[in-house]
Each structure stands twice: as structure tokens, then as C-alpha cells.
Image (cartoon, rainbow, N blue to C red; front, side, top):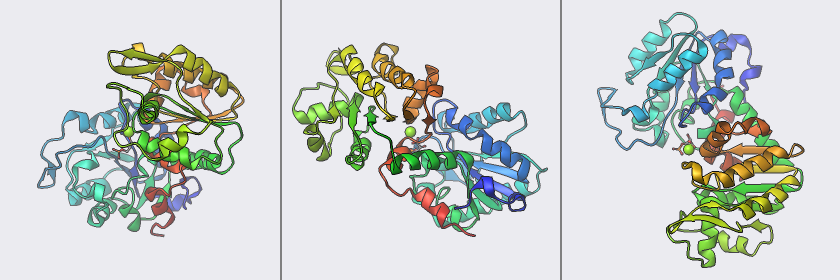
Length: 374
Ligand code: 3PG
Ligand code: MG
């Protein structure tokens, strides 16, 4: 793999196509990639930034123009954020007429920065369409992936594009590979995995892949609800997996599984774990040497149900001897909000990507960088 950090300056002289992930409610993922942008600003002729946000259903295009990109999906606000952060003009491009974009980019003064509208309005992006990869590649001389969070998706701007351009690993992605890679190889014990949030179907496979190494699996939120449901408890209208994996049964017999001891409920819904659960989990966390956390323990959108997650976060922050990692959009946003993110050894920008990486899967975006055009 070619690491941006080690690339000879002459190979970075042309236009850079930079893949980022703007897919969070706030700007933290973007902030994490500022070092790469600032570095390229000095080295490259121009930077063309591409990203996605959300999963828009309406992919209609007319003459290379998105029919209408609703504000919630538009990357205009990210371009504005960058403008402030970099203290310079950032050109936002709201169409996909590649020949016109190419002309504008290659004709621009040195150091120009462009942000292209949400790629998920382009048919083909999510199917790793080769033609789209080629079109994107036509906008630049080389490609940089600094979007770990989307590297588990086989998309044109993540995979196909690397066939047509020499490709580099950005600083943020490099840091993810280093920190998470180290964890997969030789974690120190006790190793404590903590999983909450929805989507337990994403988390059970990770638990399973750590089943030889982990010392504890502490679960809360929708993940815990799924265990309760399979065990036969009436969880009312609480969030849980519709089709729980058969592995859930296996884990229910595992002594290392730590289920909540008490709950905070409203009507028929479990909305947080209770104080006993936090005390119990905190005792385990205090002895850990390695901690991996993904997914809140309650419905943190409502401040009344944040106590469980806050208790977990504080317990991890307090353990200064452990190597601690947190990931996932909601979890990290919560930690930033509570100013506890800096107490972790590493904050991963990946949600699904972090889980798949930790589960030992090969991520298409990272494999593509290994085999990119030379
Ligand atoms: C994420 O938020 O996990 C990434 O941006 C990927 O988004 P997706 O799950 O919609 O593909
Ligand atoms: Mg997400």
C-alpha cells in the first residue's frame, strides 16, 4: 500500500481526488481528516473532495444535474465548514458534468479546493460501477482514501476509482489501520468488548470473531434486548433484532456475557440500563487492559436516557491503564458532547467499518488500495 505520508513530493504535484466521509450529524469525521486536507493543500495542484451522506432513495438525474438534492443530503454545508476550518474559498460543485468539472479543476489556480455534491445521487456509486470510477478518476492525477468509515462499502469512489489512478492511504485511514490492526493482533488482557446501540446483527459476528480472545462481553441497548428476547423475556416494544443470529443462543450460555441487571423503562419500552448494571460493568471495566466500545446503552437522543452510556463512558475514561477504543457515529458524537472522547486511547471514525475490520473481514476499500494502479 502507498501511504500518503511516505509519498515523494513529485508524485503529489498534480490534482488529488480525495475520498472523505461526511456522513455524521456533526462535523467530527470531517475534523479528523483536516490534517490530510492541509497536507494536500501544500502539495497538490488542486484537491477534489468527494463524499456521501445518508441513503437517498431518489437518485433521479437530468442532464448530469441532480433533480433536487434535499438540504439534509447536500454536502454544501460541509464545503462551508471546510471553508471556515481552512480559512480559504472552497468551491462547491452541484452537478456531475464530469467534462466541465475537469476543465474547471485543471484550469484553477494552484491550491484550489473543490467539494462535489453527494455521490449517492449518482447511479452506479453503490454498485461500484466502473464507468463512474473512470469518470471520477478523470478529475484528478491521483487518488487518496481518507474515509475509513466507508471502506467496507464496495462503491465506485472507494473501489473502482483505484483501478484508474495511483492511490494513497490518507493519514486518518493510516491511523485506523495502525490502531485497530494492533488490537486484532495482540490485545492485552483482560480484553473487554462493550456493545450497545441497534443493529445487533453487526455486533454479534464481531463478538464471535473475538470469542477466543475476549474476557468479557458487556452488552446494553438493542444488543442486550436481542439477547433478552431470544432468552424468552417479554421486551414489549423495545428495540431488538428481528432475526437474531443463531450465535445469540451460544452466547447466552457463555459465562463471559454480561447482561444488564436492571433497566429504565417507559411504557413497554426499555430505554436505558439502570444503576446496578452500570456499577457492575464499571467494576469489570476498571480491571481491563483493552476496551472496545461501540453503541450507546440507552436512547441517548433523549437526555433522560443517557445515564447508562455516561456511566460506561466515565468508567472507561477512569481506567488510565487500558488501551481504549470507541467507534460508531452515535457513540463518538455522545463522547464528544460529554468531552470524554479525549480520555480514550483512540477514537475510530468507523461504525460498521470498525466492526468489520475488528471481526477480521477484508474491507473492499482497503484491499483496493493494495491493488491500485501503480
Ligand atoms: C457510515 O456512516 O457508517 C458510513 O458513512 C457508511 O454509510 P452507510 O452505512 O450508509 O453505507
Ligand atoms: Mg452511520
